[in-house]
Amino acid sequence: MEEQSPTQEIQYRVGSFATGFSIVIALLFDCLQFILNFIPVMGQVVSWFITFFAFSIFTVFFALLGVNYFSGKKASAKIISFLSSAVIELVPIVNALPAMTLGIIGILVAVRYEDKAMATANRVKNNARTSAPRFSGPTKIQSLRARESGQEQSSDTGGGNAS
Image 1 (cartoon, rainbow, N blue to C red):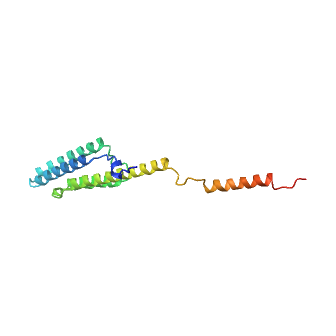
Image 2: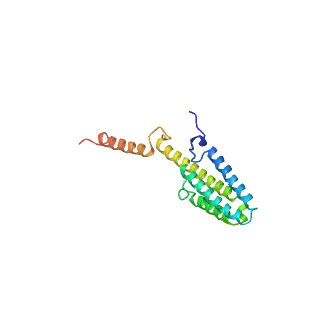
Image 3: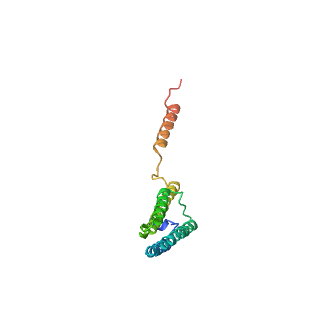
C-alpha cells in the first residue's frame, strides 16, 4: 500500500500561485510608496490612499480565499501582522520600508500553519476512526472472562460429589 506524503493531503486556502502573486503585488505597492516619499506633502497624502486601497484589496482577496483574520489558531498573529504593517505604512518616511510586504508574508505564514494544523488534526481523527486493532487475538479482559466462565462451568458440572 502506497503512503502519500503529508503535503499531498493538505488543501491550502492560499495556494502557491496566490501566495507568490500576493507577495509580488505587495512589493509593487511598497515600491510605489517608496517612490512617493520623494514628493513632499502630496506624496504622503497619496501614499496614505495607496495604503488604504492596498489593504482593502488584500482583505477582499483573502476573504475570497476563505481566510478570516479573526478566526483560527493563529488569529492573533494575522491581526498583529495586518495592524502593525498598516500603522507603519501610515507613518511618513517610515512607510518607505516594505512593511506591507512583511505584513502579507506574516499573514500567509500564519494561514499556512493553520492549514497544516487542520490537516494534521483531520488525519489523526480519520486514523482513529478507521484504524484496525493492533492485535488479532482476544483482549486480556476477554481472556480473563473466558477463564472465569470456564472455571465456573467445570466446578458446577464435574467437581462435586453426588449424594
